[in-house]
Image 1 (cartoon, rainbow, N blue to C red):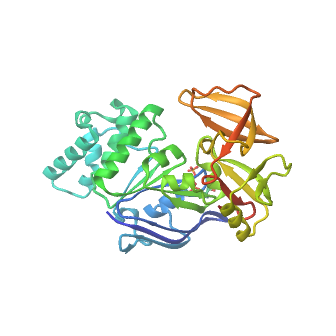
Image 2 (cartoon, rainbow, N blue to C red):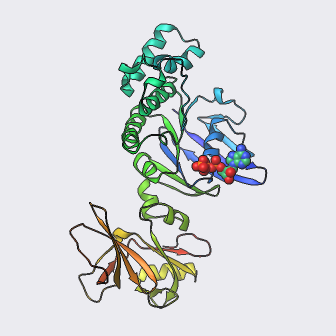
Length: 359
Ligand code: ATP
């Protein structure tokens, strides 16, 4: 187990900046997910920790050791990738035992460690099979076993569940989370799948274009996105974002039809910040049907999306659309005028220019 500390990490490929000035401390025993769209620099960050890439600038510490000049094999890490290359001619047992044999560990100890790991992964009954006699999920578990058996200080995983079908992915998510909890080993996990990130991690690092956008618990990044990018990236459906400005004590869009009165602390915060071009953000569950009059806004139902456990309504306000997440028992018809209440504690205001959150 070990803490990982990354300071001022820059990785350039020619004139492409894959990672720009990354500062990050991953706690001992933490499950940290690097999340972002394709090309945001998450794999490069992971490969730099592993020693598979040499950073252009900056330092990486694993525990107290500066590992900049250490080869991957000397960093006390284990990696699991999307394409887990098991040796096809070896049984599951021998695949898992492989790193221990390479370290010349005595045979009885190898036997005991492989069986212990197999029990943890519930694959004891598969140890005599070769990879082609195993399902995708079973192969993935063998690959995990091969990483675990070394008892590394750190696990690095790059989209390890991508090749599995949806049901198995969901199972493996739960298993990995339990496993990390049991082993209490520091885990850095790369994914572009926000459900994986939200459901498994202690903290999420959201990256875009090589830049760390936000680091926080899953609820932090969901409830308090620090930048417009995070606001639009996390959540399904994503936060609705509307451009506009402050007029007296209300947020208005360029047409003036979308007009929402803001509470006094929000107005004060925007004035204090000084930004004039603003972006208003709200999530579908932060809007409810108003019981009091006058409502905050009136929306016209433009689309109904029944999802079984809930229904998402698109509501038109002038040229803007908001979304409402409602119980399936609520029945609104296209064209209905709906009085809306906006949760003033939950709404977000961003500075259009800096793209940072103001409120
Ligand atoms: P993905 O989810 O698609 O794997 P990622 O977020 O992991 O994306 P990286 O693989 O870290 O992104 O790539 C970050 C940027 O660096 C991209 O613009 C990519 O094209 C570039 N890049 C990565 N590896 C190399 C390389 N070996 N040579 C040149 N450019 C590279």
